Image (cartoon, rainbow, N blue to C red; front, side, top):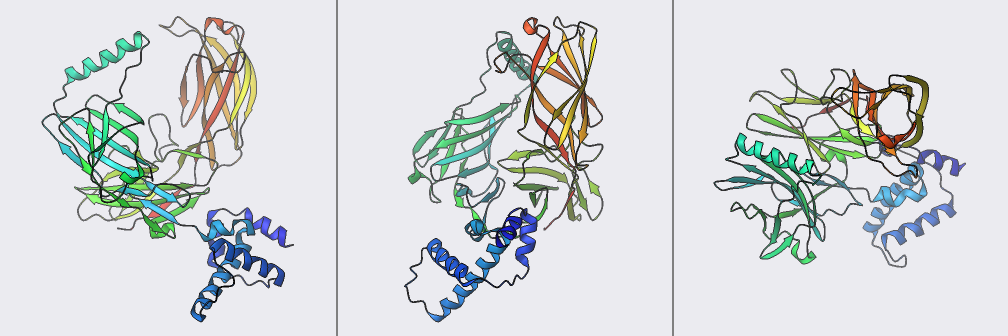
Length: 466
């Protein structure tokens, strides 16, 4: 019976476990089991059981044992150590860190800017582990004209025609005091006037602490922003950090800051689900009806002033707000998520202008994608032909709505093959794929269909703490 109870409790999700732990559990424990728990507890705590303990410490030990017994019967003996050591580190502007993550430091203050006559360079955020510092940097060019943009785009296009990649990688050097470190990895993007760089530096552990002043030199510009690090804050519960709500085993914690007529909402997810979060908001091609993330104030329901952005695992989104306006709730009607599932199928290619009716089911865990029919077509201004794949969907749960997946051609041995596709939207889902065909595709094509995308419709209404 004990094993069945423990097995049942092991299936609980985060919110169910938390609710159970808040209650009182009184169960008579077999003396043999109690002795085993006692020995195990002392071993995990590194306490010598022969050590003489004062009376005050005996009271503390009794409280610890009571908590351990509650944990044992709530989540199973094997998970006691995990439950007992649960805590959260908070890196503002970056993310909420669990006790198995390695980040130890966060930048002392965010959005540190340095300027010269040509550029403004801002360190958005920075985090550090024992031997690595990661920095998110933005560079804005002050005298960047439309002619400069046209010149940059022409250079990119010329390189694409030559099948050469246009190298956006800038030079970034991190100085820890007087010691210089070159970046060893990173993600870079450029829109012409604004460049973004999210870069990582491997650093000697002795050069990572709260005393050193760090500097970032970006492409040898005169503007050199500097920053210091501080230890991340530790909390026992998510609600100590900010208002939190959980659906589908994904908790979201909301933190707000007010500045210059705007309120910035930072969303910090902790994801224990089988899904990967892609977005909290709709975009041009993805969105469930007209529903979107909104801010409820004491005056109105507000839309965000500009699209949000990711910093680490945190999603930041701004709203314009009046001086006498008070934020009450952040409303998130759905999350856009994906999974790592995949299917491989073979499809016969019809003759040009002909259709083949298939009603072929591509099964995923929470849904079915149905390929209703395929048609070989030729688009205007294109030499090559396309395979139009028409789609329908079945959902097993009304709150988990599939709307898209990724398509890729495979060769005979199952390796990724060249070629791409466009897609057609119908309302809130992708209704057709136009797969580009090559001359060597023959009369059939092997496809890998993976990373299905879903709308998770459980709405978050998170109260704002100002």
